[in-house]
Image (cartoon, rainbow, N blue to C red; front, top):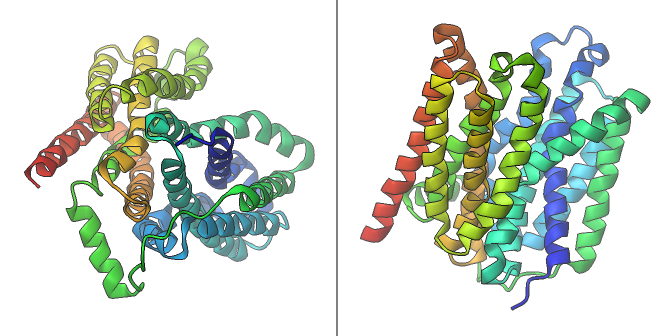
Length: 384
């Protein structure tokens, strides 16, 4: 089996569009009060609704994608995403904008479940570490591109221009992938979707040490990564602050695509994740002892980079078949959104109560939680 790398890159490109469903609002958030005067705190939901949809329906997305099939779900989600961005470019009233973000949240979930499942199925076994590590970079790369290109576009042409550009991007990938993406082989009939079946499948996934392991680690990773990047800036040396903040995501991606890929060729993905969590704990001890140390920040980003790609690579290593992988990816989407939602408020509250010293302690506890979760689930897998 030979890996179709052009198609893999196209699926990764679709993932960039899914990440931009978050990022396009984040990078223009400071402009929204002028568009919606008097909206106040309600504007926060313009950003968070996509994540809240993921928390509630992450596992459901895995079940739906497996039932409607991966190619159809991905292409449909891209068209829905394109339509929602085009609608948002009209700058509708806030209630309609929020409704469009809910629909966009469903589109986002379908993409982040279907695309990595397709990548795992299309990749040769020897290349899965590389291709899924590439997939693991989609959030960081999308946010970097939006920061570099999105804000200048908005400055020149206004917020609608960014939404229209995103709509065109999603539509372009929908057209490209619909022509080149073949269906996966059928895996037999999927169960009917009803509330009882959905609740039963939640239990099945989170009781399984195979299906739940990537999601368990991903919860603790997302809790730490976004929150640390959000709350760390005031504690960095002012003259190095911007450089460190720009370098941390780049270092994380670079380590994931180099050392991480090399390790995945020699050891199981779960071991790489455990190594990343253990390294992160040591780096957080360093940051506790030497507040804001630039090298400690970069070392932490490197350690977290090992978790990033290896977590996605663990999905096909632990689960055979596209349906099981879609379930595991759905659980990752659910836990990732939960970690992103909880991380920043929790660590911000700790900073208010205990000052800087509380941040590396709480983040370190979270990383230990990720490490122990994988060790415990690994022991359960051996027993079964």
